[in-house]
Length: 65
Length: 171
Image (cartoon, rainbow over all chains, first blue to last red; front, side, top):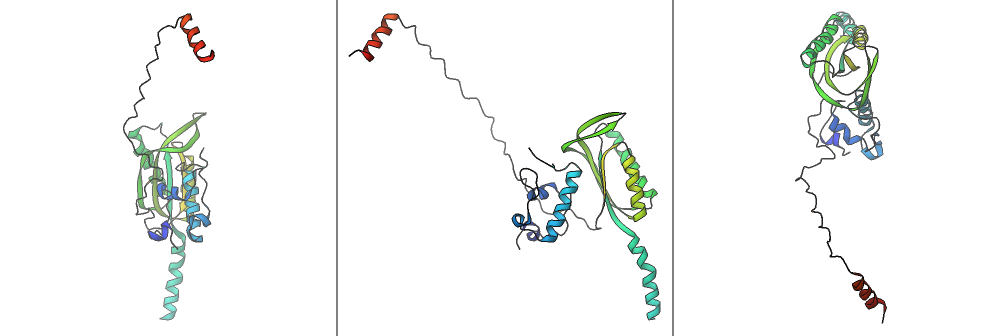
């Protein structure tokens, strides 16, 4: 299991960590699938909700043109 | 002894379950003057205190560019903003208290957008520094290539043209 979260021992994902969350979205602003991101199911769920919170707060885009 | 232990546990359990850690994220409208921002934050703090919440951590509002424009109604007009003063407060409160805070901050017209959600007491910010994905390095200013001087050929006479044409075609 080698993903950025496991390597750096990150337990909680914060919606304010925009640079970290940007690792898990593609250039269009869509969330990268688990198969590609290499996250565990639990990590993917927390990244998912953090990205959605950041989008709602206008810190990340819903779609990027 | 055992009975006393059980009674103690049952007494404390509901209290622990009732108090939860929440975080409020907010964007203060950029139309608010810098000196009034502290007042707006103070009003959010007073709402939390009124609902019986206790503060854990706080992030001071800082002007941030929004990823998309957010529009709100101001004095009966719809206004679109592309930036806002983003701040956050982490606090502990009861479920009912959190609901009251949520409703109160939604009514605050100085706030562009608010969000309240349940979180954990520990600091959730990542300790690592991640470089932006697409870093654009500033290089020297690109100078426009010097334009080629217009080829200024001397006017060609009719006779020269005819001669040149004959050289090409006439053999």
